[in-house]
Length: 177
Length: 287
Image 1 (cartoon, rainbow over the protein chains, first blue to last red):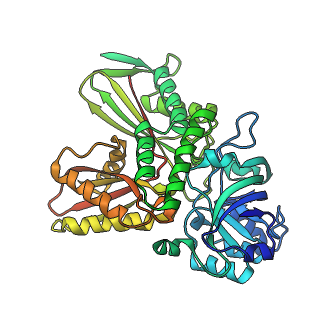
Image 2: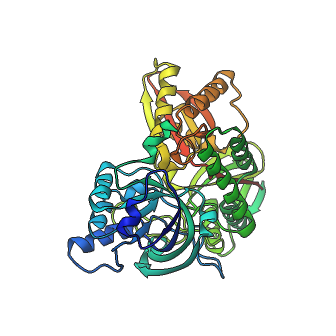
Image 3: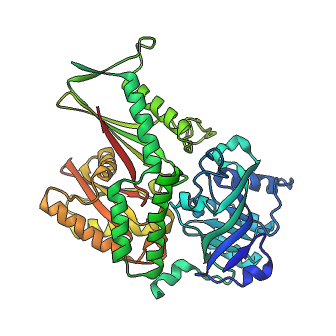
């Protein structure tokens, strides 16, 4: 199934946990430190360095790009470390996240409340996944190095719907398979 | 006394860092390929195939296997008959300085991610060199110097655990706890895992043994029959969890289980479990 970003409500509602998708379009790379800073801005009601409406955040800190390449190795990092921050970003318009592993009940509740989805990409396949990232530029927090916020353009980036808007989780479906 | 030049160590460590990032050890790749054949869950099989493809792309296109190019963990066995000669302009520089210099050069030249912060709690500023490495150094007989580098990601290291059992505890109870640690590591730590186990010693030695166990060849088993059986039994028990590759179900939750042991106090049974992801990167050199 093709998935184009930014995500619309209807696109999100069409997804079910377990669906395999190929994502194309702009997403933002952000991980621990960037999440902490974004949430601090939201707490102070200050403007964010990116537009969260319909946006997808990819939990990734890539390796430096070799000359002539868009990006280095770029697989997902552990999603649960962002659990404390994601509900606040979802309330501010975020529609999707890409990471690896479980999300907690607070995040799952926020996905249902705000109509958003969490996707899982293959952890440890950063070389393969980098082939599906065609452009990358730092848009904020350059001082964080690998943890800076980057605007990435994806092309048929493979992922699976891990948590859908209806409260389903792929990790709870595995015994049924 | 045989001597090795400081710069030789720097160069070897630099090369090992770059090789680790791009070349999955042959026995790990073989284990993944065997899992593709034995796995019965279709989605799990597809994921394993993609991990094999990832290793090929990393090797052929020189893109790191994983964006987390790890903390550099360096195991050094130094023969009692070999010394490291400091550079002329820095007579105080040691073997450890050479290792850290090698890491810094390797991560810079290899375009690897620098994932080390200088201190853990106050500001967490990146050292921007990926140094310092974690160095484990032993003196051994002979006049050679062996360097084994493991580059370990944070996602799996975060799921490693330690527990002190009563000395009268049963093997069943210890194995059940180890299996539970693997279950808790779950999808976040990038299964299929290599599970390193340290039994005995004291608090810190058991943890070190659990990591040292990961240096063993994938196909070998413990020289003591009892512990070899325990390794096999744990592998079966873990693969019955149906966690599978990426935690999406399947027969392949661990590729191998390795146990290392040490003598311990009559009051203690320390058990450490080191969770290693499928991107099990380590390389050695003998000088």
